[in-house]
Amino acid sequence: IKNLFLARHGQSEDNLAGRIGGDTDLTETGRSQAWALSRHFIGTPIPYVFTSTKRRTQEMAEPLVTARQYCSVFAFTEFDEIDAGECEGMTPAEIKERRPEVYAARSLDKYRYTYPGGESYEILAERVERGLKKAFFLSGNAENILIVGHQAVNRVILSHFLFRRAEDVPYIYIPQDRYFHIVSTHTKKLFELKKF
Ligand code: F6P
Image (cartoon, rainbow, N blue to C red; front, side):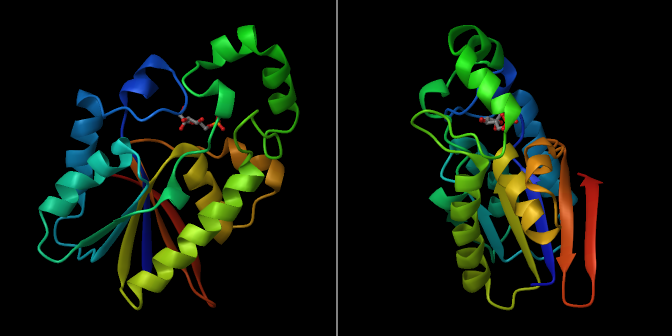
């Protein structure tokens, strides 16, 4: 692989409501972000696209994929968003109010904190790593691949290529109208955040 394009899904219904986790569709804004992503890459061959199994990442990839004749899409559970366990579907304000112990503990060590019945960034990183291995294996020597992931997933993917202290990983900025262009070889490392 020469170029890894790393995008996050566009705005989802849950994003709009401020709820974490879930499996909602993209909003109108999210769908126009998906079209913008597709338009941005017109003329760039992307033979492999990887998403999570959540609707929002698949809907984000849809316009780009349907516009192409040669494009294989794979949906990996390894790229699903961090599992917030008992806090899935809540807003941060609700967590603070109903599960103050969760809120406090997570703020202290966001990378290592494991949601009750869910995951930590540390655990997430292991499965994302497996997903990346699978994706690289399947795409062989393709020049370009696109991964459409989630906020926490993309933070972990970025830190796979660019060293970050564990405690900084959960705070990396992952917008919904931009993608990271990553070129990583033995001799060169390039990270660019670009608008689509
Ligand atoms: O809020 C969107 C989201 O993708 C949630 O589904 C997920 O729990 C969260 O971001 C991860 O970000 P943070 O670790 O900052 O809460």
